[in-house]
Amino acid sequence: MLDPALLERLLNRAESLLDRLAAQLPPPPEEPDWRQVLACRWRRRHGMGCLLPVRQVHPIRLADLTGIDDQKARITANTRQFVAGRPANNVLLTGSRGSGKSSLVKALLNEFAPEGLRLIEVDKDDLTDLAEIVDRIADRPERFILFCDDLSFEAGENAYKALKSVLDGSVAAPPENVLIYATSNRRHLMPEYFSENLDSTRVDGEIHPGEAIEEKISLSERFGLWLSFYPFDQDDYLAIVAHWLKSFGFSRREIAAAEREALNWALARGSRSGRVAWQFARDYAGRQEKRQ
Image (cartoon, rainbow, N blue to C red):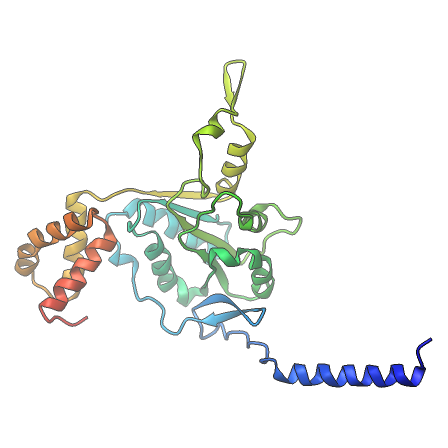
């Protein structure tokens, strides 16, 4: 039997050691002042999750986004309902790369920030922390968009289950001041294989998808609003180029003179997207010694 005096000494030494270790640990991160902070990134440091304020929010505005008027109108209406405290849906934006999906979400923040909208960017690798993030902001008066950019899952990944739970699948009701906006190049967020179609069955002339397909569709269906984005045609691409060149101070005549070079730029990149138009405008303005 262990001597009580020895046991007490061991416990005292253990407590002393724990106190010294605790002194070496970094202090817990402070919660952001949401009255001043418009956006945060969720990051894990030293095993603890924290909200890191974004020092300079992207300045893009809704008026800067052209060629996606229908998508812009629908997500703006949904966001306006949300900040007004009315029912609104989680949103999935899918389609062509560089077509303005993530830029649209950033522009919404700038549009509705004065009305209390805030944004938290969450990487795919941190989706398992969604429940913790939601708990931290559930009682805040602000309205929060949890933004998951370029979201997709590979076979064998389980992070999507945490997303499903927060969207609509937990015993706890989601807080009314939180929505999830996600962008992806995949409509169903997960890879789809031809072999999975072989699991489909035919019952009374109707096709019933297999379990693998049902599992993948069930994730995207939890988003109440789907917005699809498509490649731009030449006229739309040139209109976007013209908008950005005008923002750099070019005249109509100078913009018209730059059209052939803008088309060659898109041809070299193999894409006529809003992102490519912006990149061309930056390059062209820089070579012409224009300032942003």
